[in-house]
Length: 135
Image (tube, rainbow, N blue to C red):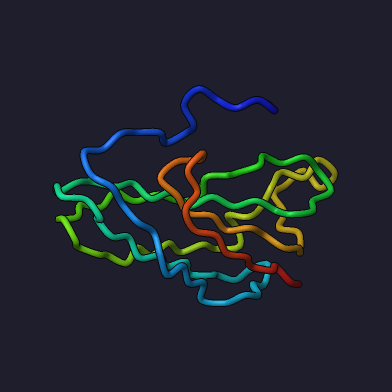
């Protein structure tokens, strides 16, 4: 699909607002059988308590097959009081970067650069990073 959806995946409304900051990846290079840990700080910047569902998306920059622009690879629900900050951690094993390869009839992880995106929905990305998958 090339058009914009009416409501992006994960869209929701809240009675407060949240800020994302301090995105950290445990490594900038990942072996095809490795693991990267993604951390982000989320702050309730509003005046009411609220719940936020940060979502982790990935996208391989150059791939021999067509892949979605954003692939959901994790999410968590957190509750925050006004002014409260929590660090949310997402383990991202290289296996979650795999796709189905028609020639090998199995899932494969190809080396390359991946965008790592965190946001409140697929249309509201608030923090970005990159990790390179190597052999």
